[in-house]
Length: 107
Image (tube, rainbow, N blue to C red; front, side, top):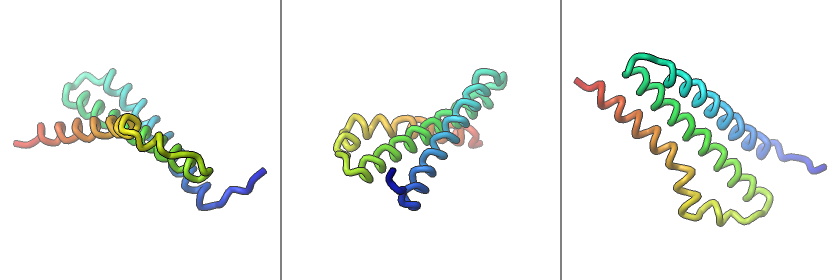
């Protein structure tokens, strides 16, 4: 069994915890989106659910990229346009929804 460098273990665990928390938040907020009656609160719950889902996707992507680099595997697939864009689209969607929610509140 190989020893894990503590710094690499902490980085891997941090991305894993971020992904788990983001997925949990997205699921809980998705439930609020489905169950909340108020239109304004539904949009807020959806915005935060998509944003947290994007954070989870990004954390998993970074964890995979970091692991591939750490173990000397090819990282080229991570930089392909499709993979790169797909990992960032949920975060973009959540950010745009949140911006829309903020702009909607302006007088």
